Length: 595
Image 1 (cartoon, rainbow, N blue to C red):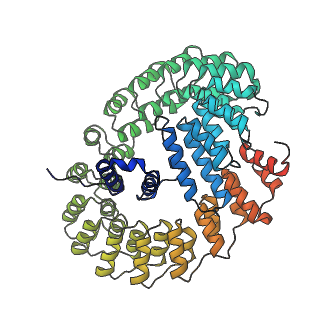
Image 2: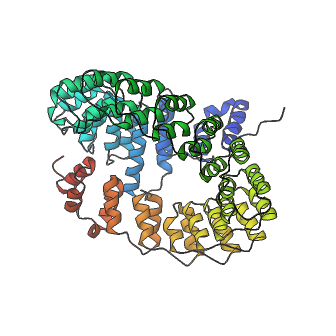
Image 3: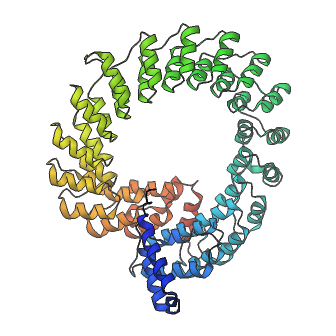
């Protein structure tokens, strides 16, 4: 039996176990234990971080968890950006809430970052029903950022006790119609009733529609009794979409709603034969050719056969095309034998693209539509060499049915065996897209092979896009072996500080304001801080607006501190008035005494 390979990340831990078992007296040497713990904290490839450490379950030793957090905190640089620490705090606090670890919550708020924002953690506690943590944060942490999100999230997850507690809290703003909509959508009847009785201003037609769509009949009946109505008289369409037959019958029997041809189309597309039959027997709207087309594409042969016998709408060539694309050979064969619509070359294209060799073979033997110039390219791009070879043999040396897209696609997706076969047996070759996309996707061996065996080369897109996806080895190889170089996009789109630093030290293109914008918009604090320290470019007002829209609150505070001329608080507050946490943060920024 072959020896199992030891996971590199587990090697340090295994070594420590062996040594400590052999020398049990080590346990009495506190300073040695501390050094060993530090080694294990940072001695593996996936190092601990504060957020990761806070995700450990409550069942683990509280003392050990706190010691780990203390060590990690001590290892952080003294000059860590305070807003970056706030971001780590926010992520860590959410993880601690999920782990239901009150001790960790308290350590984060009291020791790690007392100035951190607890809005995301409050939302998580409301969703998960962690009343103890919710109450502690509300009573002990300053930056809770009270917002409608808390009640809305509690309602969404059916946390009635939390909802009632929040409603009674003097700092809690009113909830929104999202509370009723999502409670209804998720079937939380007790929450729906409480909202209806206590928050009548959160009514919306969306609640009834969502209850019907998701099949929550009791909720739908209750809302209808409370005079909730739909804007359009097609509620049965929503119920049919997800096979909620009881809801369909209730709507029909009480003459509460009608439907359109979409009802049967949806039921057929979902493979819900009983729903199709019920609509056929009880409604007059019928269906469209989409019903058989979509049922065929998804392989529901029983639905296809029933529609063929009982309905007159028929289908189109999309039926066989879709069935072939998804590998449903039995449906393809039945349509061929019983229907006259046939297919197009898209049938072969789709079957080849998805590796359905038996379907490709059957279509070639039994249909006349053949293939398109894209067929071999689709198969090659996905690495289906057997289909590529089959098509090549059937083409009998013809160039029809293949283009440079075949090798380009195969190279981009790292299918070296396919690329080599095309290179040896076909004449179409490739374009610069082959190396460009291979580099973008980190396929270094492919890039090397193309460099050694093909003459098309690449463009600056190769290094730019490799940098975008943080393939530093590819970037370095291109820098050493190719002349195309890169553009400012490389540094602008790179996300790791390691790659940014390499580009800064080894390339001259630099970056534009878009580098800072990307870092801000994607909340990449390490990149932002590196660029701020090493590049002269600043971010734009557009980035500030996007950060505000996404409610990256810690990033927003950083931008406001460093580029106050790009942040008009009043304009942002008005433009993003529905971003409840952001609006509350701006209120605290402009009225710091009113907490």
